[in-house]
Structure formats: structure tokens, C-alpha cells
Image (cartoon, rainbow, N blue to C red; front, side, top):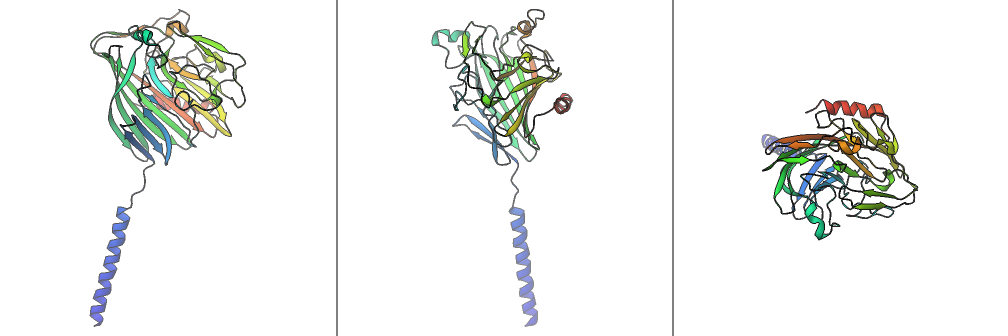
Length: 354
């Protein structure tokens, strides 16, 4: 009798231990990063610690895929909402400035930078379009998320000049988010010329709060002679200020070379730094900066004639079948404005990787 009771007890104990082990083995800790594709909505969403970070989007109304919006680790939007998701007090100029993008203003005579639904049909023949082709790879774990995509840079008739293969790497360290990307452009059936042009290459349109305070309206003219008015707005809460690796500040950063530029500002009570890091392996390094106080933050290594007032000319070319790679990192720091020393440290790390 006692022996039977002991046998039953031992069996029950073993069963409980097995059940517990199965329960523990079936429990999986959620990964810090997730990446989810939604082909129907033409987007890929990236989250970190359960919060939205950014999305790779390619709707028909955009003339190129972009990362939109960009957020801090606290969820604060650092990119402009208009024209996708307008917010009160924003500027409504330059409809082609959406989130973060990569394109250029003169590729075999075609303007890829300024193209948008605002361009009249009779002028569309002068503009190129970048079309999403495929999502090639998506991975996510505790350390990072990675996304690899292919796009085609197309002429107005739909034929492709360039194939773009881009790899995005999304990371988080403390309250600092980072987007590293490697973009490979390959010319296809014909030689491709990137004629010197100020409209390029990596661009971000920042939130109103990160603009420079401005006391007067301005007018900007693109390479096709199209003028855009940038109106004077209320400067309440507008706090942005550029600082380059060369110690240049504010609007004076425009048209100068530098290894990086740091845009410091504040949204609400949150101190923010938005940084673009160039890479020594890039063509035209150190890049010229097409950084405007009204909210366009762009690195352009190819428009050297414009920025140097004719002292330098690049007119970069690719023979049919040749490729070129561009590497950049964007930092979104929350809770403090990064110092030059802190940015230099990240630049040195980026310069010696991959």
C-alpha cells in the first residue's frame, strides 16, 4: 500500500516537473526589435521595445520610397507630417520632402529629387521616379532589425536607369536610436551621369520645432527654375540649430563640407539631437551640406559645383554595369543635446565598420 502511494506520488511529481519544464520552454521572451511587412499597405514597420520607430513606405502618391516618420525613443516625431499627416503650425512647402529619402536632382538630365504629385502632367517628362521592387530580407532580434530592399530609378517611360539595393540597420543604445544604411546604385543598360546639382542626396525634412527660428519669408528655386515660397511662421517652440564637425553653426552650415552635422533642438520638454554621419568611403567625402534652416537637412557629396561656386566640379559618372556604394548613419538622440565630442565618437565608430 505504502509502496503504491509512493509510486503515485513520484509519478505526480514527475508529471508536475515535466509540465513546468514544458511551460518554461514554451515561454519565449519578446525580442526588442520587430519588423513587419504589409504589402497591401505598401509598408514595412519597425518597432523597438514595443514602440514604433519608423516605417519603410512606398505608396503610389510618393515618387520614391522613404522612411517615414522618424521618432525618438520616447515616440516623439522628429520629421514633418505634411503632406502625409499634416500637423498644426507646420510649413506646407516642398511636397517632395517626406520623412527621410535618398535621391538626386540630375541623373541623365532627369530630376528625381523634386518629383511629386504637384508636378503638372505637361512637365513630368523632366522628372524621374524611384519604384519599390522587392523586400529581399527582414530580420529582428534583441540587438537590431535589418531590412534589405531593391528599387528601380526609372525614366518617365518606365524604363530603368539604375537599380538601387539598400540595407537598413536599426539599432538602439540607451535613449539613442540609429539608422545605418548602405545604398548600392548600379547603372543598367546605359552610362549614367550625376551632373553637379544642389538637390541631393540623403535628405530629412524635420519637424517644425527643429527648424531654425526665421523672421522673414524666403523663396527657393530648384534646378528647373521652379520657385517655392517658404512663408514666415510663428517661432514659438522653434529651437533647432545646426553644428558641423568643422565648428560651423546655424544657417552658415549650408554649402560647407563636413564629416557630420548635428541638429540640436527641443520638442516640448525633450532635448533632441538629430545627426547625419558621412563615411570616408563615400564619393565626395567629406560631403557638402544642403542644410536649410526651414527644415531641410541633407548631405550632398555630388553637387560640388553649386556649393563651391564653381571652384570644384564633380559630375560623377557610372559606366553601364558599374556600381557605387554610399554609407550613412542617422542618429536620433533623446534626453540630451549631443556634444561635438559625443558625435565624433560615433563618427569614428562608424568610419571603422563595414
